[in-house]
Length: 456
Image (cartoon, rainbow, N blue to C red; front, top):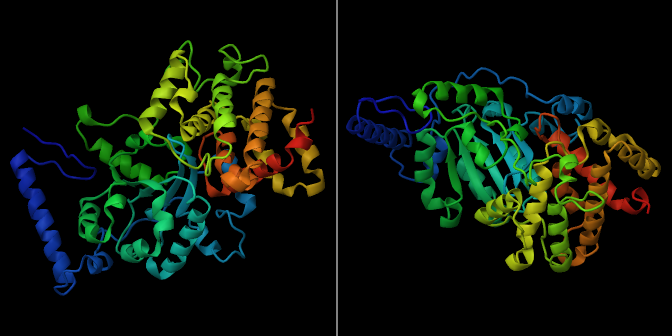
């Protein structure tokens, strides 16, 4: 009887006993090779720097990033980099090794690291790359965040020092990372982490998760919002095709199910007007969450920056979609209500600010400061009635939050970082640093000028 691989990229064996022996031999050979390469040094730290991660060094050059129409329109903002050419990190950013991709399914910011986009070591300053990664994380480390690492494409030619990387990031960066997902892990990378175990704290070790196929990511984040390199997608297709049909994982983005009669999440605002919205068309979820937060959360430090219990989030979402009443007062969890509000906005079929305004918003930096309020008012006249009402309702609530920023630390700029990607995204749903920066900037300006924009 044939036994099929449990992990991506492993070959088929003929029986469980043979598979066990094969794994044992491979692991033993690997450790012997590591020992020999290091001249007998048993240090796991030294092993990390000397280890050859894959045998095939001659990877073909990666295809250009597959940007959406909307994202490609942003090339005028700085080519393939979100930074101007004279920025000290421009030469790092242009490779698009590090990306920010909105929020995951639990309201946490998503940082993506693409190993296949790393050029050979002699073409990249790895210390500068670490500094750039820290600069990117600095905008988000005060919030709970998720790190997704696409391992495919890392070779002995382009690998950084994992030991230096781990040591470079102090507790500030490790404290609020809620999960590290290693996509397409090889047996070698698993062994590295075993060797690295003495240097990793127990709490951080529990945050490391393996993702064998892209379809498994859907439980964590909508893959449509990730700009996944073509080589990673092709590799995923290759390993999926190598499996027996009965064990092939499902598609990356499964088709949407028909909406339930009382469904609140993932439903157009036009449909929600007839599902427990108030006379102005404000959806039930928005009213419930903001009402609770106005009474209980305005002075909560880090409101909208923390994640919530995963099972509770799923339970509340299911209750709303089933037409059951939800009482946040009974649950008494500020961060749960905050996460539910962000999730509701993120799961709208079309963003609250609509695809029609996408280009105007990402190019808003060209508008003179004196004309910004009038320009925004004119832009918002194109919104459907229910979108305009919900946006005004949300922005006025967020103004109340920022009014308490001395206590809750959520200034307009911080709120923009949290809500920008939940108010607007491209038509293919993908998010890149090139797009997120202009969207966040527009959101901050909208909050700053809300009294002039939404004239009573």
